[in-house]
Length: 357
Image (cartoon, rainbow, N blue to C red; front, side):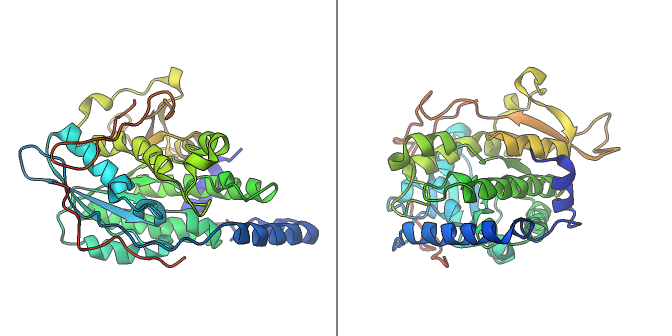
């Protein structure tokens, strides 16, 4: 069980080491190293040319809302050949359907990016008058064994800069790398533990900076284990179109709330559903343990901070699985796709854009 104190130490860059392998015996380290090499060989390399995704999605009246996708290969939609299936396109179309306004998408995510690459992406957003930025980051930080404190510092700085620009920020926290098909036990256990620790630290950092987070964690794990051919892409590491759609569905409600489009979802937390107003470190740990949980800043008695730090609201934004209520893709306005709402060094997305309208 991940503890709030450890998550807080990660986020405040104190007392947390650069990885857990040093705590293990030499024999275990050797086994893990061999297993990691075998997993690396088993995961294929997929040549990929990023499809054109930048452009206008949906239809309606008014000035288009502006959405920016940032982060790593998950944000870019790595291995997909149809731009309309990428998370950014799905989110742009979903936001447009809810807002009844067109949405302009710009994807600055880069395959292989870690949190230390976020400042470059932030600079590309500066001056664009974006309304909301959605950031998927963290998996490569774990793979390359970045110190969690360094990862969350880079993320916090990026979120703070975006907020200062007047851009709402939603962070999809580090996914559970323990679900990757070719990573067996005990490496999968260590990968899962590292992923959750980073996700909790990311949540604290992002909320402290004024953003909100959605835990992707084990969101896909049941489906990955049950339907690996459907949920994994051709390299057996990145998600398939179905997997990306699953992630987009989880983040869409939070993006709409951040934009003020769904005020009815700004509800009082329900303790019976595991929701509540908690110190941010406790909320971060709860979210890291259960996917689909949103954490955002809160006030108690008019104050943002209590004896244990920043207050945060923990809300269950998504409770249904993709099999309970299939995510629908189809025509939305003059183009794009509609998304239903329930409760290595890489190429960048093509800057030439794709006008879906």
